[in-house]
Amino acid sequence: MTPEERPDTRTVSQVGEFGLIRRVTEHRNQPSSTLLGPGDDAAVLTAPDGRVVATTDVLVQDVHFRLDWSGPRHVGRKAVAVNLSDIAAMGAVPTGLLVGLGCSGEVTAEFVDELAAGMWEEARRAGTALIGGDMVTSNQLTVSVTALGDLRGGKPVTREGARQGDVVALAGGLGWSAAGLAVLARGFRSPLSVVGAHRVPQPPYEAGPAAAVAGATSMIDISDGLLADMAHVADASGVSVDIRTDQLEVPQRLLEVASALGADPGDWVLNGGEDQALVATFPGDRELPDGWRPIGRVRQGRGVTVDGVEHTERAGWQHWRH
Ligand SMILES: Nc1ncnc2c1ncn2[C@@H]1O[C@H](COP(=O)(O)OP(=O)(O)O)[C@@H](O)[C@H]1O
Ligand SMILES: Cc1ncc(C[n+]2csc(CCOP(=O)(O)OP(=O)(O)O)c2C)c(N)n1
Ligand SMILES: [Mg+2]
Ligand SMILES: [Mg+2]
Ligand SMILES: [Mg+2]
Image 1 (tube, protein in one colour):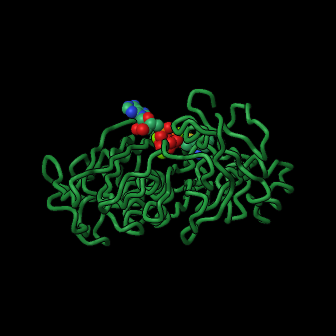
Image 2 (tube, rainbow, N blue to C red):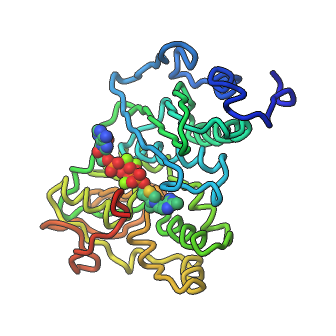
C-alpha cells in the first residue's frame, strides 16, 4: 500500500489490530543486529559480546505528556529518547526497541502512523530500530518501550562506582524541559527552545559510550531531576556528591524565560526532570571526553550537597507524589 492509498482518516477500530500492526511494521529498514523481526512470535537478535543491556520506561497520557501540548510525533520520539538515554547511561549502544502501545479505538490511524514515525525517527538517529511490540485497547494513550543495547566489549557503567575525588561531569542540557513544562502550563506555546525541549528531549547518545571508554566510574541519565538522580548515585556508591553552582551556569535563555514567568531558573536546572542529560563521574586526574563538562566533585560521606551545603529537601519527580 502506498502512502497515498492509506485510509488516514479511519480510526484505529476501523483499521483493526492487524491492519494497524501492518502499518506500523511495514517498509522499515532493520539494523544488522536484527536477524528476524518484527512479524513472528518474537524477534531474533545477535548479541555481539554475549551480554544484553535491557531497560523499560513507560509513558502515560497526562502523566508524561499531554496531547494538547505535544503531537503524536513528539510523543513517539520522546518515548524512544527516554529509553535510549538509559541505554547510553550504561555506556551501551542500542540494538533494538520493543514498543507496547495502548490506545483507544477512537484514535485515528493517522495518529498512530505519526506516533510510529516519531519512534522510527528517533530510533534511526541513534542507529537502531523497532524490532517488535504489542498493541492493546486502552482509554489512556500509553507507550511502553523496552530498549536493548550492547556494551561493545566494555564494562557496564553502573550507579555504584563513584569514588571520593572523582570529578562529576555533565553531557547535555539541564532545566530546558522543566522550563518548557512551565511555559506550557501557563498556556503559552513559545519560545520553542524550551517547549521543543519538553516535547522531545535530546539525550547526548554518543556521550554515554564515550564516557565508558574514557573510564567513567559511574553514570546515570537525569529523568527525575539532577539532585534526585545524583542521590541514587551517591547512595549506590556510598559517597557524597557535591554539585558546584559556579560550574553549572544557568543558560541565558532559561534566565529570560524564568524572568518572564516569575519562576526560579536554578530550580529547573537542579530539580527539573526529563532532559535526559547524562551525568558521570571520572577519576580526578583524567581528561574529560568531548561533550562533557565538570559540575562537581565526589566526596567522602553520604547524600548530595550543593556548594557544600547539604541538600535535604525531597526534590525531583516521584510518581504518586505529583
Ligand atoms: N516494575 C518494576 N519491576 C522491576 N524493576 C523495576 C520496576 N520498576 C523499576 N524497576 C527498576 O528499578 C530501577 C530504577 O527505576 P527508575 O527510577 O525508573 O530508573 P530510570 O530513572 O533509570 O528509568 C531500574 O533498574 C528499573 O529497572
Ligand atoms: C503533563 C505532564 N506533567 C508533568 C510532567 C513532568 N514529568 C512527568 S514524569 C517526570 C519524570 C520522569 O518520568 P519517569 O517515569 O519517572 O521516568 P524514569 O525516571 O523512570 O526514567 C516528569 C518530570 C510531564 N512530562 N507532563
Ligand atoms: Mg524508569
Ligand atoms: Mg529512565
Ligand atoms: Mg523517575
